Length: 126
Image (cartoon, rainbow, N blue to C red; front, side, top):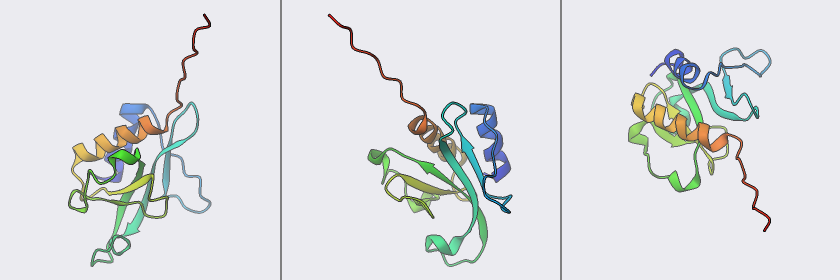
């Protein structure tokens, strides 16, 4: 999957467009919920070497939030690694050129759900 196709998927699925909150950096994109402004995805360009791979190629990577019980469900062979530059207990990095599109979409959906505002029901007074 390319960065452009990932951003199109997010726009078509969630209606969100990227913003670029970092001064002088117009490549690193943040995708947020409209309602609470929380990030569900961070797209950046990173060297494969940062993931322990033997290459200096710079690729597009997306960081996504997962519930802790899902960690370990995906491996490096599917393009999923512990998060680069974020909390490795809650975030993963997905190498966009390496991960199958359906894995990217599934993990993005999980991240979107994990970061949206939780609705709490009030207990009835009785």
